Length: 180
Image 1: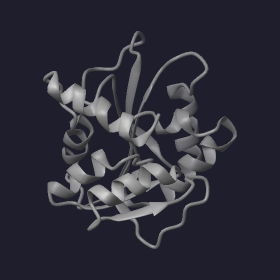
Image 2: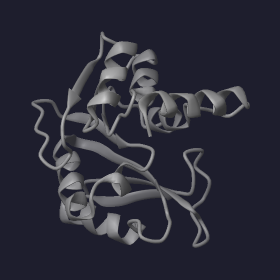
Image 3: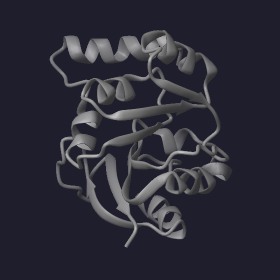
Image 4: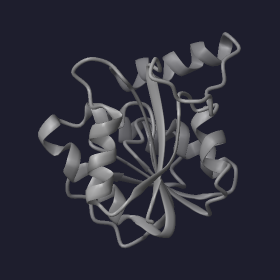
């Protein structure tokens, strides 16, 4: 999907009365001061978190998405990089992977991407990810295994960014992991 088409999708959701900032609302409930938006796309979540006063860095593999994010918010830090081997000097209170980031990482690199994100979480911070549950995509068990191998345990799981309870019939999962 092109950066423009991606942004237009969220504009349509907002115009129809939807909340385009559910991920930011969710993350803010944990009161972080700093956030790494891993797989930030065009910066929708990162820009909203910064608007709310958080220190935010956004990173994405797609150069066009990062270019659009930079154009929309040049005052923020945007890093073009691969989640499989990204190394930033900063550690964050929260690392968020919103909007199907993990399923879009190639299958052979998903574990490495989770480990990279986990390395960027400050001592008592959280790793927060949301993705669709559909055939051929990672399961919550897969994701939990990758998080556990990075030293993280599941603190909470929901079916939506609005914190609806997770059920076996859920088509989406939002997971919050931290170090035990």
